[in-house]
Length: 75
Image (cartoon, rainbow, N blue to C red; front, top):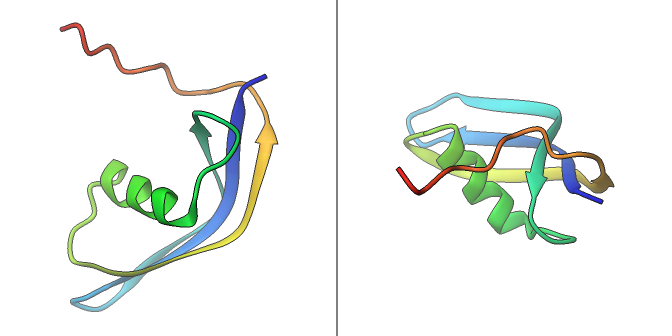
């Protein structure tokens, strides 16, 4: 069974403001992902700049089919 992580997050920007997500879901490899890895993934995948603190809240690993197609690195 494929694993996904469901979580809330809050991101503060160093130049002011922030962004939040509730019940956000991401495909993961394996059975778990650390909060630090998850924060890095969100920032990289959303191409965020000037990121300050990232808070991961209400993290839950769920059994659910992956939604995103794997990257094809052969091109």
